[in-house]
Amino acid sequence: MDDKIFFDAHMHAFNLSHPSISSFAKRFVRDTLRSLRTLRRIPVLATLIALGVLILLVWTLFVLAYVVPPLRRLVRSWITRLAARGKKLLAASANLLVVLENDIGSSFLLIENCLRNPENPLLQHDGLHVGDEIYTHIVLTPLMMDFGYKGSQPAEQGRVPRFRYDMVAGKPIVEQVVDVFRAVRIYAESQSDRSLAGKFPSLHPGAKRIFEIYPFLGLNPANYSLDKVKGLLTKYFAGYTGQRDGFLASMGTFDGNIDHLGVHSFAGIKVYPPLGFDPWPEGNHEAMAKVDLLYETCSRMGIPITAHGGQGGFVVVDAKTLHEIASIHKWSSALKHFPELKVNLAHFPMAVAERTRRHEAIGLVLGYPNVYVDISCRATSEVYYKRLKALFDGMMRTELDVLQARILFGSDFAVNLMWIESYNRYVDLFSQTPSLTAAERHRFCSINPERFLFGGSNRRVQDSSRTA
Image 1 (cartoon, rainbow, N blue to C red):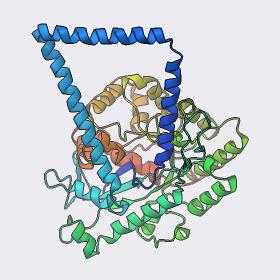
Image 2 (image 1 turned 135 degrees about the vertical axis):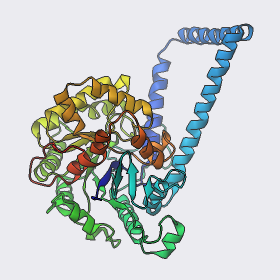
Image 3 (image 1 turned 90 degrees about the vertical axis):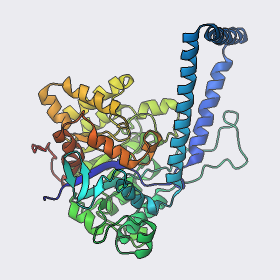
């Protein structure tokens, strides 16, 4: 049997020690106070009238529900569904919290154990079973996130409540780097370490660990000087070839000293607008110089960039800034200047309300040779896949061929646990959905991400003409 590789092109490996929780909390307080200030501008009389109307409507509904049996059943059904959703949300939150509280060194073993779940073992002795294919290797690309937000300043006097210890905790990316590479080493060593094998008793005699783990470096140039950005790119990507053999040779070799990490430690770069990254800070000469350096280096060497898509996630900037820097138009501007840039616009949206953003993303995929999208975190139910199929069915053949050559499978683990109960279930949904053909499935989880990650350097990465 030929070796086949399954790729999860978008997942994470961090725990609660890495995000700056205080930054998120202050943003929440700031936005809440702004909402309250808006409410203060509403006349008291208008507020009382609106409140009175609301109470009257609720009272009328309950009275009618009491005297009209069909309406009573409907109200009970609403309350039951609301309670069920609340219970599901609490369970999902607890599930995610348990994962994020665990030692990050256990996360990859946790995922592998999940895939070997005896009730539905997608990962068996001969490989990972997805649809009609059996994959003998699984590549994970944990995306690090630069949580060190430069704009996290002490609260402004009179605007946001001042606290006695009003200092946002620093969350340098270096700590996350050390933890992730230590986790990769633990996973690699679990092959022969009996103490770890006892903690995670999932391997059959003679079986081998199946994951190849190639992290992406989280980087927000705004958090560093131009020289520092240049130093990071030189340290980790000078001599970058983008070939799988180079990453595989360095996997699990981390000795605990970050200074010893070098080329082929990172398979790409992750950027995150909700944490303050501006994809095209036009008008800011200093910021543009750093972004230019990043894009020029990545474009010239074929280094892949994965960019968080949408305005959700770990947000620390204010709503106005978020709306501006999370816009697809920012990437449109960047690609006009760097048309060869290899970038994955993550979380491809299929909701009706996101129609505009979806078409803007498709426009960039069709307009530039190295623009990709992934389905991470979005594909948590069959509804997503049905909408994706409807999109495919409505496209012209030539445009459809291009789009389908640029879609990547991704999970967004562990964040996706807010919407689906396990990693195994997420992969199984992708494996079993009738909305994708076998060829499409194989393209999204194997052919396309292999080209995205291992397309090589210093050359134009063209669409593959191979079929599944």
